[in-house]
Length: 238
Image 1 (cartoon, rainbow, N blue to C red):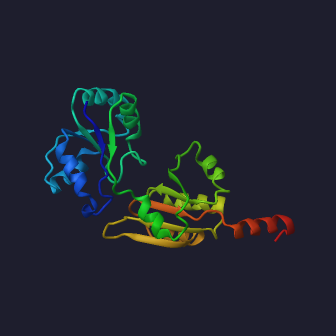
Image 2: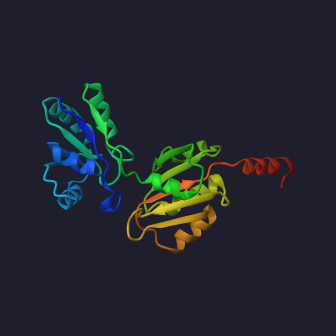
Image 3: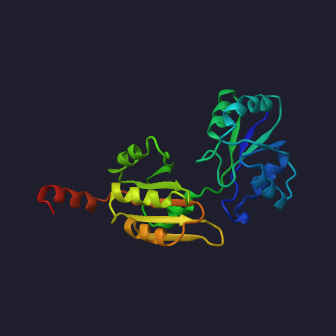
């Protein structure tokens, strides 16, 4: 029986791909790609001529069974997303689970993931953190933010340029304008930006400057000093 390889791809700078990833993409018989146009550009750059097949959020449920049967028949495959590691806020989980349930070996290569450099760059504790990824757009969004209000670990979010200001305003409501935050966008690319400051300062910055690119938002967890300040406010009203 063949194997499924999970292959991370660069989040921006093409030099961030590993030699092992290139070798794997050349050796498999089929590459499952979130967007075949994006992956075709990557493959052409590294002289990879392996056939591509679309596998994305709109077809993954319908495609899983057929892919599993194809791997069982002897077709070795690799799964890639547009950028970063598949299954991290991208399609992949359903296929990995289905392969494991069918005793198909799954091998995940190490490689690029956007939240790692953003988390390390933030300057907040990294020994323990919470990865939230993209919050629900509507149902359940406020509930998730409420549940995180007492979280003492560093919290990591993903957000698009179209909703980044909305997210910051929500964080201001639930965590207060003084809570420290670090925001990275366009990581590893020419116009990479790393903002560090308070939530209130971030709102001003990204309101005045049109947001572009994909964002990783790293929020400092609730500190002991914040616990004391809230306790004193409740006790003494100041």
